Length: 238
Image (tube, rainbow, N blue to C red):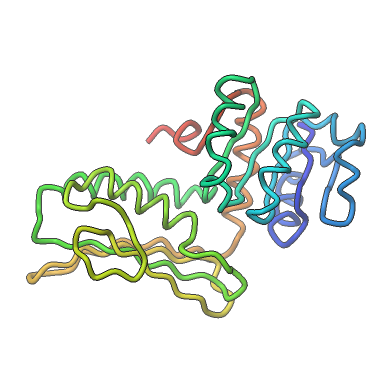
């Protein structure tokens, strides 16, 4: 498979190595200093572009890739509130393809499935309050993390006593989501169900970014054969 990379930071470099190890060809690497390469024949030859950039750049990158007929796999977060409707229309009505996930880790996909199942069970037990805490490296500026938001939305969808999620809240009708920034932590997500009698906790603790990078390449392999607006739940049927 021919892959283009959009964004060549730590994640982009790790994706490059894993893609090559799996027998794929990297035909184009686009970063902030060579945006003109979106117009190159090498980029247009890609089956899929894997995009990990900043929230303010992501949507524009999708448009540039789609204009060249290139499908996109993206792990960029923070763009959906402003451009979600446009992306859904492009994928559902205009034949474009985007595989988007807030987290590509296989472990997080499993953790998310456990989260949904546990929330359905805990909906029956109102004596338990629930909260989420996420911890990431000090370079991560947005909060809460996209993964924490996804986990929170899954809980809200399944627990009737929570109307929505919020940061820094003491109102029990909201699911509280806290964030911590320290060191070089790749990502820790913890969900706690607390009652007067006991505490139930589930945690996903990433050892490195390697799991995210492998998941992104697996998503690219899946995207090559599929179209539309895709996500982890399409690739993994839990």
